[in-house]
Length: 414
Ligand code: AMP
Image 1: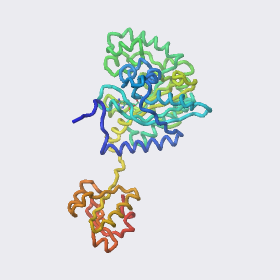
Image 2: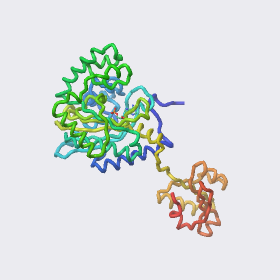
Image 3: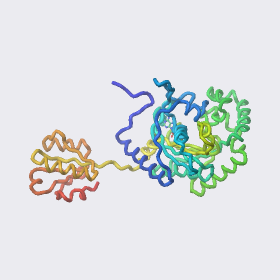
Image 4: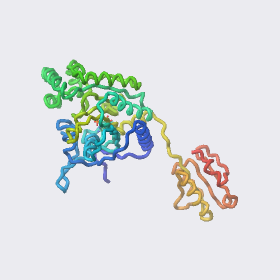
């Protein structure tokens, strides 16, 4: 027997209606805010991510699925959407004209992380990117779209929003120096990974989940206390606009996000229901990224929601989802014509309809209807055929009654 590759999973059955609810919700929400869909390739040249996400990030250093293509390119399964969409934005010259460009994407991402609850090697993200404005009201609106999705999906009460400002290339280097000097004093308390990060990517030490690193950084200097005037004013205004949008938030001065490209606003919706994998969605502003990837100097902001985690939360909360109601048509050789006409009529009305391909006897057909978890069974025997009616049985209550053929669709309260 073949088994799944480690960290990959099959998704089917009872989970599917939740995925559909999420998909319906985000299409609806993004339309409200003028985002259009961008379908991205799953493969990119590895440089897109190396340059876009940053060479010293965990994703690029350790987590990408990379292979050499026979054509000579080194390719990577996309670990995230932002670098890809920025590549697409530049390559398709979507920046011509001066409108703000707003896109959303949805699909599987691949990271070779250590699998655990809420963490897979193939997982799904839905995300947005807005290019063309550095205004803080856009930061707040972007966050609002994520809140709307969680609201539509019924989990807003079990997530909370953390925000931070992680400065810009003007103020961050000075802060980094201070942080490195603070952390160097605490060197003996840090884990091996953090020792490694200390000089290469010191901000990452701040969101290490290991207890002794957490206590070592408890009194570390905070970026929010070292922002330049521009970043400080941006942060203050963003908070103000969040309040206008009725969004509650906490300031988490040690949230840094794993990717190098962020500047100013960083945010995450977190929950305590997913063990160590607490973030359901996160993002931030990345004003230098388009230029870094070879495009014009256009600011951008975006986020990604982890759909697997969102679905887990919805299932834990037992959020109501539409289960497809099903009809099973029981009929016989003498009533083939009427039976198939009925099936066609139901399906034309978008009703999920099945029948017994083997045409067993009455009892066997009913058994199959049961196994098929049919909500309704329609029976068409010779006497029903002669009288122009059908028998309709509600499988939950067991009640059966006669219905005129023409009235069947309105009688099926699905
Ligand atoms: P990131 O792109 O790392 O900011 O992740 C955005 C969101 O994607 C996170 O908040 C998670 O919900 C989700 N996510 C990231 N990595 C994984 C993973 N390995 N498995 C499942 N979900 C993930």
